[in-house]
Length: 189
Image (cartoon, rainbow, N blue to C red; front, side):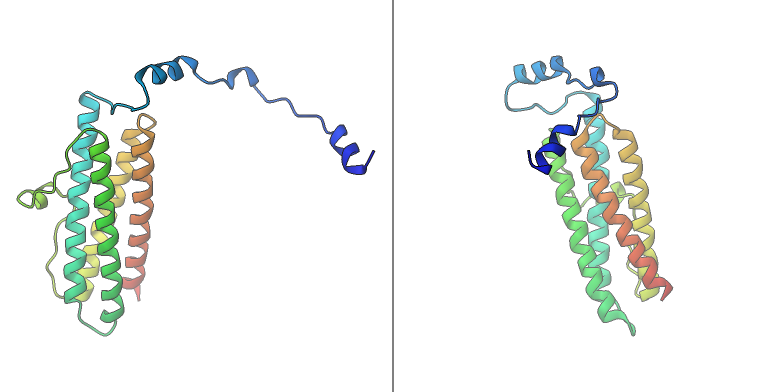
């Protein structure tokens, strides 16, 4: 017998703690099987509430994308060319966030609200039209902190009830935290 074979024969599998609790919920599996291959989005007031909250986050992302674009085009000052370039990157990332939220709203059976008539009123973060670079960056940082707070609260509200939406929100939260850290760095420089 080779050393490898002897070693393999001598290794005993460790018993799993609470192995009897490590079982799949067969009733839930059967329920899914009975509904068929296409899963229906969750119905009811809870789902409508989630769609409403996601539409408010969508409005916030759209306003942030517009604010960043304006700041990209109007940034002036010594460091402005490099910062303006990064503001455009942020604008594009915020628009990608909006697209992801809109897709999830549709998946949940809702309608994404892109109406420009009510966009600013539905957004958690204000639009900013200042011309001073430092003021622009402060407004962008404030909006990122608002987004971080919103997504943190949404993650807590969703909990384990909707893992797909939760993962989306956690991903957006991480990206908004990165934006805030970058803006803090620019303002400190």
